[in-house]
Length: 457
Ligand SMILES: Cc1cc2nc3c(=O)[nH]c(=O)nc-3n(C[C@H](O)[C@H](O)[C@H](O)COP(=O)(O)OP(=O)(O)OC[C@H]3O[C@@H](n4cnc5c(N)ncnc54)[C@H](O)[C@@H]3O)c2cc1C
Image (cartoon, rainbow, N blue to C red; front, side):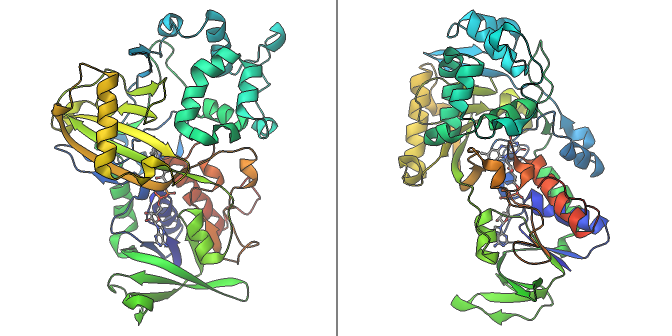
């Protein structure tokens, strides 16, 4: 049997792929719910992700999987409108004329920004089309230095800096130019006249998790089972031990410390599809990637706040962005309610935001939205639900690719140990559902020997 640690999208995808290749699998999920970071809330209509989710056009593996699982007709690519909030005004920034009309950058800055997003290097006045092809060349280049040299100070200060503040906060100066260039490539095709199509599964990505669970089979998944130990002998993994709420399997239960029951299962291989701290506690493998936490509210409202999907904030706000989901997927899908995500990343768990309780955050965030939109009134808020995750995204600092955890850990840990979690190569330059699926498949294919060739980890 192949043991899978974690029932998020990566673990379920690894299980699915391994089963297709004829393996017997068992997924162990510590919590009572499957889906990990793609977990959902109920609404008066469809379920909705606790953390905002959409797909980019460059992400193909998830689209193939959605089709393979019979959900292809539910995948839609609506335009997600982007805007920048500066000094009380929402400036749409998708169409060429909107960008031209944006008053907080000069025409020259807009030209330099556009050239960079088209991956054209116009330094020295002669356009070059291959400068940004090799991301490795920019892995050690600080993002600020790169942007000032390759665009202009104005582009950095008036466009990128507030975005970097929102995404990386105090760690923004550590991020590499390669990450930014990777993100530009990651976005995929845009509709020049309308904006960026973003993928969403009607009914929510919870449907994809459900379809994977159906495909893998509930009998091959144990929830409430935290893997606590991997047993290695003669350089090979032999078994895994899980603490379980109650024993449902045929394994012989034993008493663990603290009274919880444990089960030990013999395994041929193990795929660790969880955060690298879990890998470290199970195997001792130390990953040096730093993670940031996320605090994300879903605000259910009677009325619309703006007509924008993704609103970046050009001032120092207590949150990073306002993501109005029902300007992307119609409110009719949610019983007519309007749904707004308010999100912030946390670099340091000592930060005030991480220390605040949910009521304090609600007061702070809704109060700030009222200041930004004086005509908006919080009395029309029907519900405020808050999700937090201490490891929501890696900090893509310089030299990041040297820190990623290999899929196959036979040299570093023991034969039969594989890693598909967020610190894997597939989750660069952006962590995503697609990246989780790719990481799961990469491990499965290495186990089945379909990938003996050394490919980039
Ligand atoms: C704020 C936010 C916004 C996002 N936006 C997008 C987006 O727009 N588009 C997109 O595609 N992606 C987005 N993502 C990323 C996406 O959700 C993740 O990349 C993906 O869900 C990661 O899946 P995973 O299976 O690798 O990890 P996880 O979802 O973290 O799953 C790991 C699982 O392992 C379990 N586990 C941990 N320890 C153990 C143990 N010892 N034993 C057993 N089980 C264990 C956990 O409970 C968890 O269920 C976003 C994430 C966040 C936080």
